[in-house]
Amino acid sequence: MNWKLKKEILDVLNSEKGFKLSKKGGDVKLLFIYPSTYNVSINNLGYIGLYHIFNEQQGILCERAYIPIDWKKRKDFRVYSIEGFRELRDFDVLLFSVSFELDFFNIIYILNLEKIPLYSYERDDSYPLIIGGGIALSSNPEAISEIFDLILIGEGEDMVSELSEALILKKKNGWTKERFLNTVKDYEGFYIPKFIKFTYNGKKIEKIWGDQKLPVRRRIYSNFSNNPMVSPITSNKGVFSDMALCELVRGCKYQCRFCLAGYFYRPYRVSSLERIYEKVNWFYKEDIPKLGFIVPAIDPSLSLINVKDYVVRGEILISFSSLRLEDITEDILDLIKSTNQKTITIAPEAGTDRLRKVLNKKFTNDDILNFSGKIKDYGIKTLKLYFMIGLPTETWEDIEGILDLIMNIRRIVKKMEISVSVSTFIPKPHTPFQWEKMADLEYIERVRSYLLKNLRKMDNAKMEDENIIWVFWQGVLSRGDRRLKEFFKEYIKDPHSLRILKKLVKDNLLKEYYLEEKEKDEIFPWSFIDTGVKREYLWREREKAYQGVITLPCNNYCKTCGVCI
Image (cartoon, rainbow, N blue to C red; front, side, top):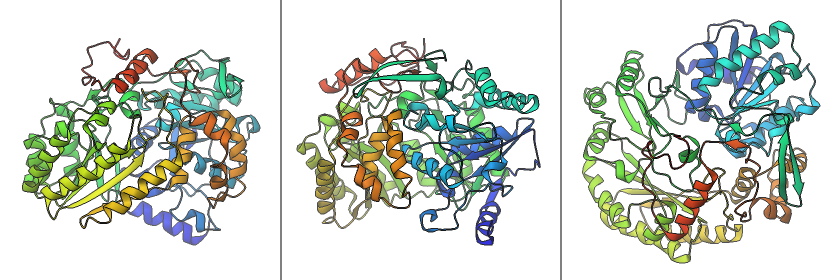
């Protein structure tokens, strides 16, 4: 390891507060890799929380690794563990936590860089076991599934102890990889890609079969209410500097039809107030000044009055992720004001009430305008708006509606800055829109250019950019299958530039196989994964979308979707 890289890692470690790894060894050495940059990894609560849980297991030494921000410019780039400065081949297990499909490319690059054979069937027992997890792999791992010896499907908390015990047995008894995989293949949520086969008929999948019991059932954390996840570590080098994160709820009750998290993390669960207050007390005692609540939807049972006491006394700062308009009460606005938070984020997603109903968002443009007028009195300086383009049933009237809505908001908020984020709709597995066609890139570019041109005329409005190449590949990878490995062979020839990825955008096979509309009964690459939500329910929700019919928020008692049965 060269001195420059070692100094960067030491700077990262010195920036951290909270949990410090004190173990010097263990029966099993596990490297937990986040295939993106440190500033993103430290604020990924699932990743950093599971890192702490792994190190609570006897016999497991878990270290972390990430990639530098400027890795594409560096000839000296290598991946090392940040706690022990170890190389990847020094570990028994490499575990990748994957939140975003585009990080698939980084996994391929890391393994190629470290001269580790890419696919499981190419690696013998002299190489580390390679395991994957995270929502990007849990929802549809098939684009890169053959890289992994094992993939963990679902929420990780309860799987850590089972995996750790099996890894320790493997190490102590000298098991082969084959023996280990045969041992864990019946564990709930443990998916062994080599045991599953796909038969194709043209561009469609004809059959999924193999030596593992199907379907693979998504693992659901059994004790969220009593033990919600909180950040064991904070850092001033994170995207949210020096901020600890606390998960108030898991899942979302509102059932937005495009949203993977809202369907994949069912049932909707709420942390107990007692546990929240315990966590806030702990953060205060640990001298952690900022606390971020991860809360897609605030439950009426969540009273945050006691939390506000800390804020009013100036002892802790509170920040919320994007909030649902329906959830923002006077009490929440008072809490935000007392934190001196200057930015508030909402997600209209669409510019018209009609299209919002398609998405299953009940609030109207009038509701948004009323809210915009209200927040002026709470010290807010920036209103951030999330929109989406390329949505099912979208017309040019809906695009004009985005601009009209922003202009009407401007008239109300006057000098308040408006930050506009416009992303492209990506059909996601396990959602009612998993059957949809992804919009053509030419259309997406035309819409983005039109919005950008008009927003530039508004003094206090700015729009974030989006790389159209990455939009295309996110769509492909989201619904991809094992046949994509031929394209990855091309990518690895020149991973430091977009040249090959740009060239492949013109490949008609990619568009036909992965971006077109799917048939009702089509077998998907992810059809072997059972999330608990019935496929028939998702199809009915798609039909309701085209009718503009709203589905009421999840109440955990209805038994309709299948998760709570």
